[in-house]
Image (tube, rainbow, N blue to C red; front, side):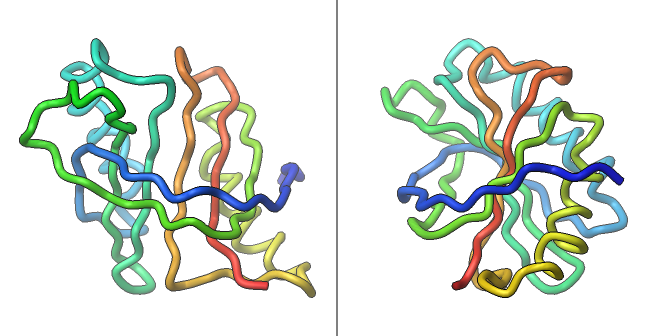
Length: 149
């Protein structure tokens, strides 16, 4: 398993707009990409600078996963819903490409948190992937995980 670079940041609150799917750990690898395949073609023309994949845990296995963007100009369709990222402290993991996403999540939750004296996972917070503008599956992106400490 590779070591991923993790840094700590204060992230500002953001209101995002998008669509969601209810999934679980066993089905995430099919449900989350399928959601992006539904979301992206319809909204690519109005996509702002970045897109977010937001995970809101329901319990230890189940979660809501959002494909979302910031709607700064009010150009997105009204049938989309909102999800809010709370301001707070996040561990940020740089991921080299989409093929490494599962490995990166395992590293954060199984290795990085276990090695920490200072920071702990904030189960009350959410986590999100931040995909920069003009992103493609071979490009790097970041995973943000809410922390305490």
